[in-house]
Image (cartoon, rainbow, N blue to C red; front, side, top):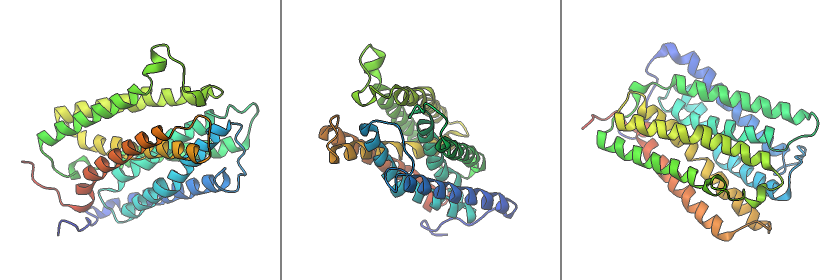
Length: 287
């Protein structure tokens, strides 16, 4: 097999499992497109009781969902149908991203009464959580590309830097500062993001970094999972900021757009570098 040839199914007994998982990823893609079409980016059937600033951010989020998250979900589904080893690692990113975002869809608007839209968003959240767990379970740690201990340590350092970057965004409020202006009238949005970032993302990233330093069996598997999320969320934040500038939002900042765009490109570039051997190469020997 040449270095750029995709792997073929290795275990026929898992074909039905991969087919079911691939179908699930296609379903997720359909749900995401439907949500965007019915929201403010599309025909605006979903009426969110949120400020214009958060409405602008939501539009930016939906753009990234259509341009990045949905295609990756479809690609992961195709790879799953082929029994490719990268199906699980590639799927974890969009599945975890969707779960992360739809927590905010459910909690953020602070509906005063029951709204049927919540049921749809709860359904998308549930599907994405199931697929994220499923993506983890179908990923075979033994099939991951080989790497050197030195490279694993470098990856670990990078992950610690990513965790520090996420944490740095909350240092102001942690040390008594005010929350960002766009969340002044939507505190639930802010605290739900705090919960997800500091309660899940940062700990998971640090644990993965430690696993890489120790060279544990599941370290690379966790690396792909964490980077799959990091490759998607920063672009969404950058897109939110860009839409705010484009629509002359009073809290918009061109400087913030530039910084967030650079961060997003760096994150995506690093993720692409790490994922490339998984997608296109045989397992190389560990030097």
